[in-house]
Image (cartoon, rainbow, N blue to C red):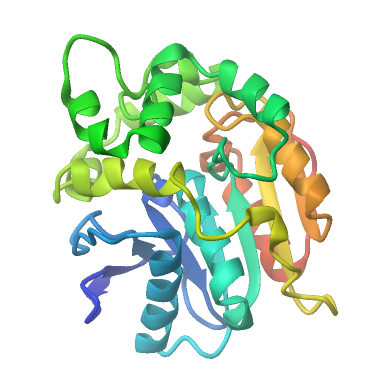
Length: 286
């Protein structure tokens, strides 16, 4: 079931996160099913040329009010959806009862990363992905041309290049390929520039705040923040998530030993992540 808010963003209600998770932020309020809010430019949500980390967080707040979810709610973001959750922690922490980030996107240019740590992690990405992220950060005006040219491979992630996925991810992808593709096609119906390209520009651009200066929104433990990371993830690297979690010790860090970028979609991990967020149940290692 779904509808559209006055902000132009489609509101979907589902029982659990799905394969659309990376395109949406999940809001979970008491006595309601999870609501999925596609980022601007995805699905039927209006494009936003001024999309930013802050604008996405403020959209979440506005939409929650429109749906009368209450003064406080949980947020859950997967992969690219992670930057929206970081924005919520920065700009609307007073509205949150908890937050979970699952394999959240890493910006290699966040200022608090030691240059050598960030550089070494960046070099582990396959070359097409390095080029794409470098252009998104350093030459954003060139991104559209780069992503649409045919001479060299561009974003490995957008093209689902097999080298960026672990063996476990490939098993998940094979199952997904057997499913109808209507959801994927509709999710990008606004065009790849307003969806994928703007994601890259926001996630890997210059943020308005230093992530590692975010303060604990739950100083008296009235809520919790979690990061879930697959050890075998080749798209979002474990080294930088570990560094981040050490710098923000109030975040509960969970590492799934055999998990890749898509571990959440199988083996009951969705339920485990939600239970840890809502009731504090700890999931056993994979």
